[in-house]
Amino acid sequence: MAMIDCNGARLAYDEAGRGSADRPAVVFVHAGIADRRMWEHQFQALSESHRVIRYDWRGYGESGDAEGEVAHHEDLLALLDALEVERAVLAGCSMGGSYAVEAALAAPGRVAGLVPICSGLGGHDWPPEMLAQARERVHSAVPADRLSAYRDRTDTVDPADVEAMARAQVLWQVAGPERGRDDLTPEVWEAAVEMCRGVFTRLWSGPRSVERRLDPSAKSRLGEVRQPTLVINGLADVPGIQEVSDLLAEGVEGALRIDLPATGHLPPLERPHEVTAALTGFLAALR
Image (cartoon, rainbow, N blue to C red; front, side, top):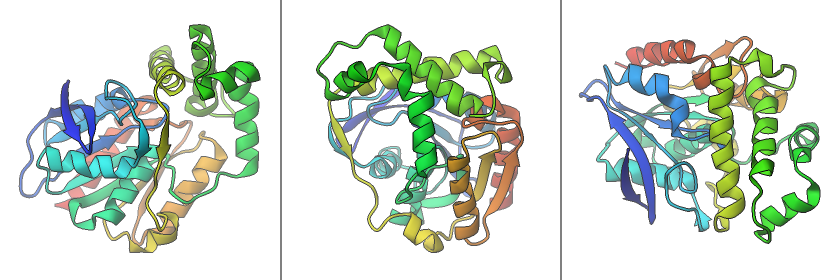
């Protein structure tokens, strides 16, 4: 692990492999319920043929705190600058996918390809039924008064609440709303819960931050995306999230799409071989 200054933040990252003129670097952007460790299989496998980089967003993993106004797509572009990456393929999962799309719109010459996986999308409103399900299945894991206190930073965080929230989040998203814990291998379950613990610990105990997104929104500008794009969707993921895969596949001209059966919100972790194979094929087609 190394640290680098990017856009006023200290970001933790790993780097391996070597690029070439016909093989752009690959940068992995993790999900909002995880950290850079979710890319372990892809990072190791693709380092044999490409320069690969994975990093923690500010406020996540081993990176510095997020405080004040934060624009994660700008941090991503600053990382490319700091590591002297002229052009890269951006593979992003969940909200990491949305930041990759925003980076491609903000600096199209820097992005050679996009792989949004179970992605979010700037400017898209989550459907009310999805938000209601999140409240019922995830937020209810912690009593409302304590959850409010954690969000307001007015109470010491109880590790038992972190554990309860992490397990509820992983069950709902990583397994998927129609599956159970036994649908994930013990290794995937434990890895996902461990990363999610870190997310909620920092979210509830770190400094306050406000996220600034690309304006105009990415959703309103999908027709401007000209980079080769591969959309990967998990068919066991939350239906409202799968709708974003529909928007990306239909809104980005020429986008390819892969639907992975029996797969929840973190395909790189749950289906590592399948995702790595898809990435390998996509990268080969860029030459």
